[in-house]
Length: 341
Image (cartoon, rainbow, N blue to C red; front, side, top):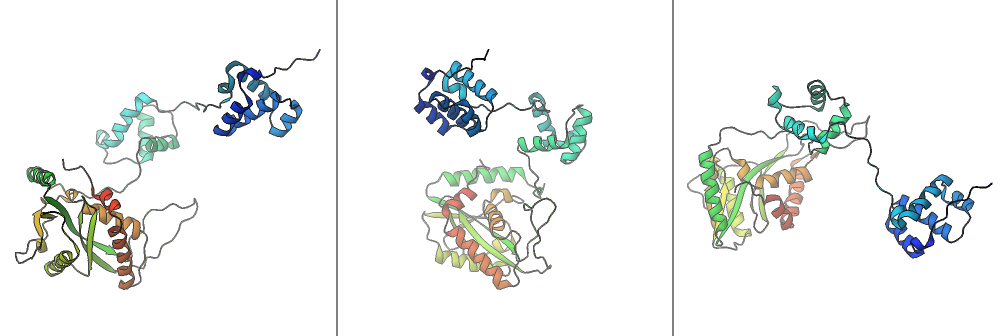
């Protein structure tokens, strides 16, 4: 005696509802909805099996789900996957351990060393790949640490924060940040993505082609100004101030320019024009957001760059400066930070 096949209930959804769900859903959802549509319109099952490359068992499962819950029963859900080896309750403790390697007498972790440690100390049975994935999931990445002096005077830094906050709150004051940075015509090769088993090459002959930029930025309005210099001294810094006076139109009554304690910034004969100098506390480059401009320029314009002569390097610097001067929104984004207060 032949077995009767389950049929979809056409009252559970209209053809239009099935088509809409198919169009907006995933491929799996679309396949299920199409199969039910074909059955409701009377297309033989053998043709559906062949046209959609599905099995009779799958069709029966979809009909059963449709009859119970309508189109909701045809929507494919994401499968939960295998349970994680590192449990949620352990994750927070392990993250703290990564951030504070000194707890175990180390100065830093590699993924391999961390895998070995937690396998033994926590009796975790997990692979190296699991640990590597855990690093990425928790927001860790391989980075070169920033060299940082430990000679700051916190009292001076606190006084500077307070002074800067008062200046920022004064609507008659614009704050400018100035600094110098060197740019190599043959920078150190940086990390890049390559296919496994191969390694790209960049030209590196060991030449020492170098130019400096002296620049200033106003984070409030996103204005950036810089000049190129073969060297930096008091005469060159005065030239920078003279050019800034010609090219920058102040928007507020007072314009404070914050600089570090380099000797050429403190020469008494300097003509500051419309600027009022304010000096950073010693060893405090983190208080000068123009540092972020230099990092952005080197990352975007000088990564794995090779210049065979000074002229090529100057042309590249011109492009980088022009890119920033024409993009105040990028300058604002790069230099606006709330680290001080």
